[in-house]
Length: 287
Ligand code: ZN
Image 1 (cartoon, rainbow, N blue to C red):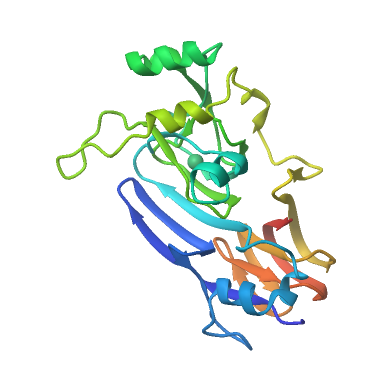
Image 2 (tube, rainbow, N blue to C red):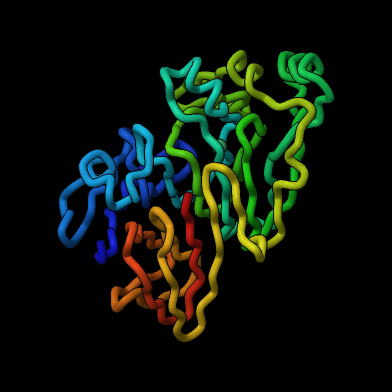
């Protein structure tokens, strides 16, 4: 297949800001192809009916989800399950590993990431007491940081953060604490027991915050991500099942198509070589 797949993002207004689902085949926001042979079809339709575009990869669902997140308020403190827990307890869903490439951040704010409990019992006591200051770890971040959130990691974003989020195609979130906020006069539902089931103790989040995107790329069993910075012109080869390109900064062209910050697209299986021109920073994600 020698056609790039451009998708229409699905915009979600959240109580805390906005999410733009730029590459999504999730039932809550399935992106539609905007041009070319497959115009008008959703990404999940391509996954179901044209699996050859993705090298006939296995799986019920397109495995990844890419979002642009703009947090105007703090998010709830939350944790996500892994595949095994989600399969067993959430109707055979995928778990949720996610990572963030930070585009913007308020220097006054700190990110909630990880916890200080030494055992499951310790965690449970702190949570039941509502002793959030003791329980939660906070880290400083700045634009250019990269953060991997393994399933079982307690986390939240803070207001003023803008980022690209690359994750497994899952929306399973267990909310632990919502800063005692009310929305329309009511607190949002918490999921303390499920959260306690999946929180990793002791915490292993420490080496998952990178001050800059790792030079040799970042690889997990769910996604591989590389960052490329182009100043002029560079040729690449698509030799993977598919690649997702997400523009983190700047603008330019890919094989003559204009691309700019916040754009994402899919390069299908067998596309071959492609040329990017411009002054542009891109995350390339594959399986
Ligand atoms: Zn999360």
